[in-house]
Length: 365
Image 1 (tube, rainbow, N blue to C red):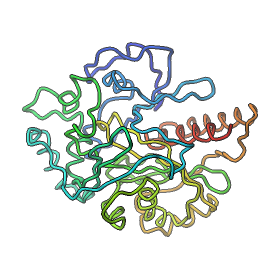
Image 2 (image 1 turned 180 degrees about the horizontal axis):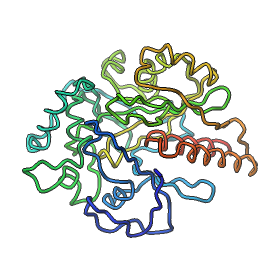
Image 3 (image 1 turned 45 degrees about the horizontal axis):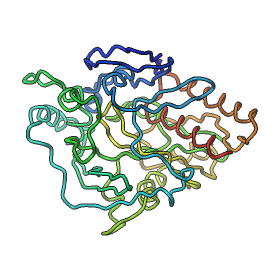
């Protein structure tokens, strides 16, 4: 099961961690994979091991039906004003200077890059790095290489023959915390994740193809992917807001899904512990299309090769009111989504479900 019981003093095994989580028992999500894909080959720690290793981080905890669910991720920027994109106080600027991996990590990087060059599923395209974020919400972006991401964020538990430590232990073992973005030696390329609810109240969950390089065969968030420089290229020089970034990031994705997206809300900027603090912008949106329409249009989409099928889970957020009965019924539906997704869910789906459900409950007061 992806949800494991998390208790105080959780063993760290490979992570060689110290003190585990204290407090009442909870359930932590563990993203396990049997895939030998390069993007997952060097990511080995369970959710419990990650919580123990990053003992100075504050993992995301969400209460549901009297239970506490813990995500192996920290929150770098919390949503304001119920996720209204125009009120997030985040402003973005783009630099033309590309990210370069620290030469001192060359022996970690070299074998991964060599293997990537011989994998037909992989292409060393350009991604967007989150270079820095200040306390007032000023975010600095710059271009980076996808292969540099593969050899850093996606290789955290890689230990070359010449080294005694994994990359995770080398970079974070002393502090037991993630580096600040401005100090990080990882590519930290930006991911964008959206949970989409249909007009008939169904949460859209694509099952990824077994041929993709990242999270093959899993139930994933409705839409997800790395931010491409082309997505923000039309924005031009200067500062822009989260609403502009979101529209640019999801324009192509939702054109491929073949449905319109409305009522988009920001759920937070997360840092995945498994991938060394990789930043992920999470969103929740609605579509006037039904689940049946989404499934039909997906079959004709240009990106359909990445998805086997689309599953819908009953969410019906529009049925939630201020009364305890409707809120309890909604929590039961969310619990059913987590139970029904079982071992198939990846972190983007599990985190998206919990963050979206928290947003819905907080918005109805």
